[in-house]
Length: 499
Image (tube, rainbow, N blue to C red; front, side, top):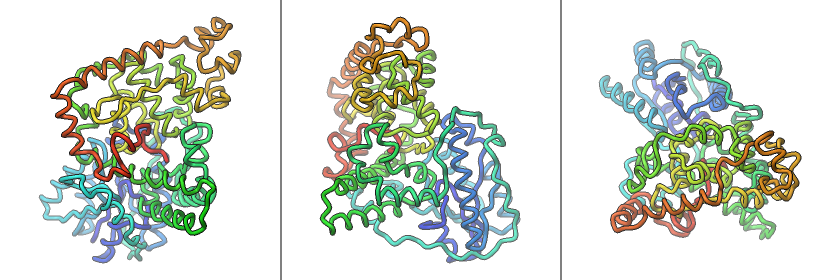
């Protein structure tokens, strides 16, 4: 029996592990719901709801091939042990996963279990991230070649006599309500519809629309949760994007499509580029990438500031609007993700770990490799990226000039004139609103930014800092300057690359 362990690859199309396993014997397709994983600080109800809906559709697709998905709840090693005894499992198959620290430790336990039983475990690459990478030289070329390979087709499966098991609900897993009211629906058919509509219509204004929460919600592809959970493969999206680019070029279009698809294609590369960082240095989920920043912020955050930021009650209207929108929908466009993290790390001077966990729980599309790399970028602790401290008032004026987004999510400011909306403390009637219906700012954003800038740049002085920074560039920076230049071209304003 070939056991295919589904993880964050919830599809039958372009599924290398499933394809290879089916060529070697009967297949038992398995997903293990691990309660201990869902109790971690970066997991949330909204993520499980999205995953469980995707699992339900995957089960139907596998049933159409001949064998429905088998779901078990519990510790994965115990589940594997039981299935091996009952069904004579000969080989374990899965895709490679670059997950959080918990899944990394879990996979080491699975590997030890396999070794003890002489059971081969074949882990197949599913995108451009490479295991045990010695150097970033040639990385971009490898990515291009991998994405150009033919997609594996769904195989025919022989039925296995085994109970399919129930997909548990969020309540079954004791996942608390998290404020979600309008989250993105899941399922491969919806992912395909999103990809089609993006490449046919919505993506035309992608380049100029993706920075604003007003326009980005429609003009972005919205594929990020589907890529995070694997209902679409990166190869599927990339090849469809390349086909669109060829069509645009052949037709000689000058209506925005060329630039839009160039920008989108770059972000597909960046998806794997940032996951590669966590693959190469798992410690960045917990420790500063550059050790020179150790101790610059207290590891015990100011709880009052953290909770005000997470609730959207900082008194900085555009920041609060973004956090409230994220809490309700599970999605936020790339620049605003960077801004809210920047405010937490610089203006509120919080260590990145606690707000990083809060954002991870709120993001339906949480992808650990991208997330923790980007959290540190926006906190200034990588040592190799430009320090970018967003002005939350200016961002509101630039990205929400009419105030429609902010007024939707911060209705307490209804009495404030439009011209003062993003800085209501300047309004003549400020005292009638601030400290009553809406809080006063918990920091002066200009002086807080100035103090943070001085602290961060002070660390960068000295030969020791520069030496470690150069070592980090060698290990983590791309070698293809026209595509992924770390200090000039890299996306310094993105979290979880929500496309």
